[in-house]
Length: 79
Image (cartoon, rainbow, N blue to C red; front, side):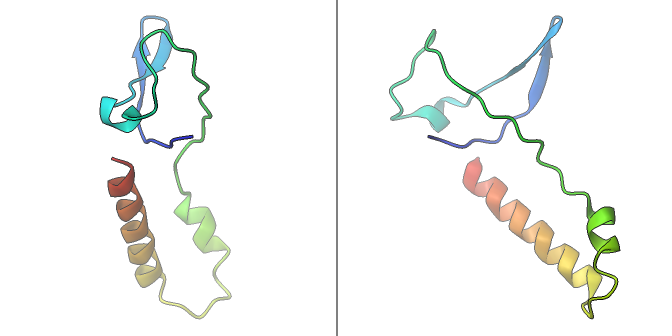
């Protein structure tokens, strides 16, 4: 199983995703093959998350910066 990050695009009255050719290299799939896609919206609700952190004694800005850095690192690995 592979994991890629791509954007949902509107095609006519439907939505579709583009799968980068490099992401499926070595997976032995070709045009017309049936695949299964698992959807997960990749968005962190920081306002809701930080509302829960009010009792913590941490620097919220530092935490947000670290979170963004981790997300960027993950995005680079998936690209």
